[in-house]
Length: 460
Image (cartoon, rainbow, N blue to C red; front, side, top):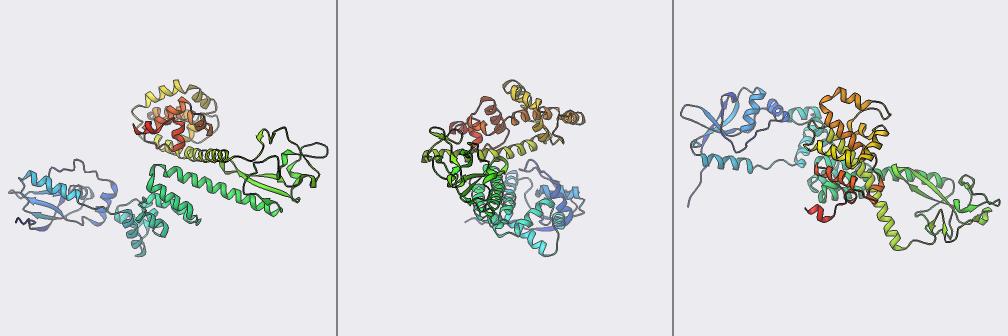
């Protein structure tokens, strides 16, 4: 039976500038400012593993980053565990370095936020915690906010959400919107790529819901009956106001029926969260009106009679896709703004610009005609009028000429997208969305429809 023993050694405090860093399996040793700052604040807490050669030189076997960070931070001495490590045994060195790196278990976000919370209870501010741990202050603030919410903390520790995802849940948790929190938690775990769109859709739904509730309250205060669903049968009561006529055969103005008996209201929401009241009358004759209907149709050509189950399902899907497109548009443009803020343009930028100018030229031309409004948004340029803000931006940032060109062509295409884009997909927008996907943007289901991507395409 073979018994492996750990070589014994001694802990010595050594000037990091005198240490010799061995060849390491970690080919790069990135030193982010936070890590260096943490070394500067608290020193090296875990001793390095090293061995001493015949000439007295101390060779670092494990602790490459700690050594380099200590040198950069100007630390006088650091703890080093010096053992008889067999300096000439290359295989042993590689095995020990692999084990030392691979067998670490990093702290989870749940561990971190609880530790930051404990430090806060000890009287440390977010700034102090960030400084002493080498963490960005905004991240610590986010973690502390999450730690104060049982729901958000549980989403991190049990649901596997990232700290940023859990922080987003807070805005819905504050509203006691448990259904939305549960739905977003499920999306984050099952389909993280869709999470940003799901969040934006939930935000837009909330805005629309609040606007709708406000109008409902105003209409109920007038004595009107509030309808949960819009009537789909235009040949029976309640009748739309615009189907009614006065004794003089004039259209009935909605303003003239305000507060009258038998008035019902359905509150509809539109693009941007706007809510409007649609008026109906139970008994037109009681108010001195008649019903005006064209043969087989009412309400401007709408089908007479109740909707079939199939029609209801189609309408439900249409509304769902429209809402998803609206949310995706916001997320996509935010992504583009961040993408164009990068220092380096994509390698194929020139090809993409040329393809856009040929394959989507009319959309780009239309965007230019309308002042390249969206391009300005993507570049973060102030001003939505027809001034020369983009030209001024280029003059101030001549090294970003490719970024400006990309913003103009992509802004022109974006400026000409709408809900109709997914309903009637075209090759130019399809190409554009596929290009964004290649660059790293995650297309949501309705964007994949617009990109004319099938399951087979996605699997390739």
